[in-house]
Length: 443
Image (tube, rainbow, N blue to C red; front, side, top):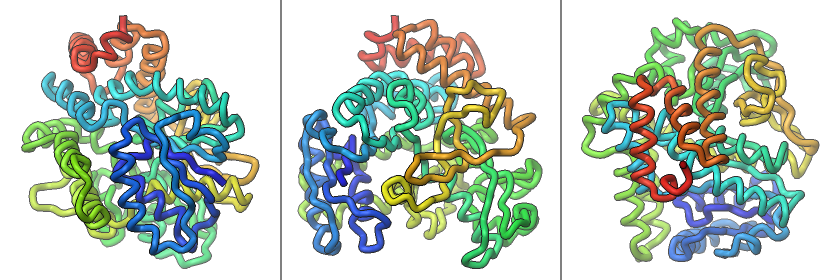
């Protein structure tokens, strides 16, 4: 089988190589094709992989290309993980919002909408190329904002594009471990939301919901990063474990103050770190990559922790997205069912949302594709937040597709983290000024 990575010069690509090359990998990849528009980044990532390869006797053949048609030709799976505008674009996403007193974050709030505006046109064109060159390929999308991008690509590829994220399944596994469930137990769960906005509402072990026991135990909650971020009292109050990104909705003031008070935004930190890594071929590519990766993971969501508080080492080492992608590929390729949490078509899962919208829910994946689990009704504050954010997401897709400044303004104004219509307009104008491509796109 051939796996093509769009964004093959991305910093985390060696993690994907390790996952598909491992002896215990659930399915075998014969060719790993790395596609990127930046040949110099491809060369450095290829050097890291070349150092890793001797440790993996079953490693696939690795190829690199800057030709998108060549990359797609013969692909069985396409894994998309690109950043349109690079880390410097992320700086503009964050700073434009922060300068107006609202949250500046990569995927949540106005920064995520700006990221979507410039990403949706590229990803839609990529979807057309895949449709024409590799119509039987499955597309696994990790390009952020993943829910919005997956929904836009579905308009071209339908069910053959699936969005992934490592945070929901990681949350579920932490909850199961905290419950003390024994190996071989029958595990079911109820998770619902949008990408970077969801809740684990039940975890059943051999038919009994153990989530109330987990929520009632300080020792259990201490082992769950999301509970530490939100506070034990709050997760008990809502009776669920929130996705970690809900921190930005539940603690908006604290998040904005923390980010504005930091020496650098996350985008500025990553830009400095990765610019140094990619500036010239490292003398020891693998060693330098491992050092930079550990520093990156250790500082993830640092704004949500108090000063001096470190991320737990098991959370740093857990990684995740590459394993989610591999599990999805393996289930489709081999037919061995896998339980996952994915971004898929809503249908009738949440009746209050449009049928063609994308939601994030538990699924069974097999050779026939992705089959979402039925979920319990969504009501109250959870439904309200999902509905409001989904309306902003769909407006921003339409704005990017039609090139409409007015629709972009509506999208920003609709988002719950933008507290003023006038601020929404200034955000649109600020992003148009910061990104010439948006200035050309939005009329």
